[in-house]
Image (cartoon, rainbow, N blue to C red; front, side, top):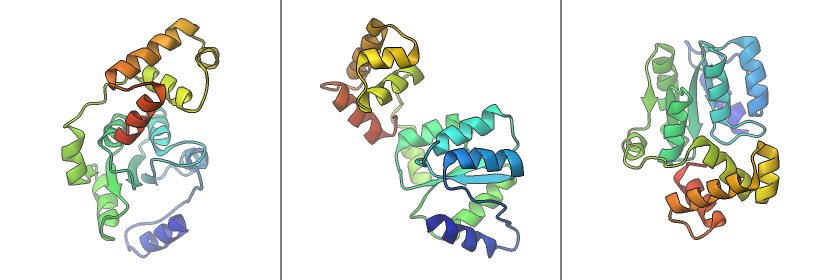
Length: 189
């Protein structure tokens, strides 16, 4: 419903054409590949592929398409990860209605638009996790054992336990579940 409403509102703008609409990140990749839009609007959390995975894919494919994230997640960790993924805009869903069309125009013209309060917050606390630690923690939070994680990532059990231990230490967590909660709350997971 939100996607349809957003498409309808953007279609009212004289200088913005909505060329596609995807129900999940995987479909978003396929439509981006086919339609080659100037700007893609995505959320952080989407089924099948996240908005960050979509943005990374667009960057890896070296497409000219720019990405704007529109989300409820006002977490500095998400913003930092989005910027690392090459995102050109990061807006919160509770922003005034005229912000998104203006952001699209700015990003289309090569600029960047970030929620100002979140931008300030994003640089106050750095994400201490490596990509591999994040990956191991995410699988651990999904309920996989160290052995299952090791098998899935082609690592040995000791290496996985070291990653989990290091993550717990970095986050000053009590255990892997607490580490996942802390990382998720900060937008690092």
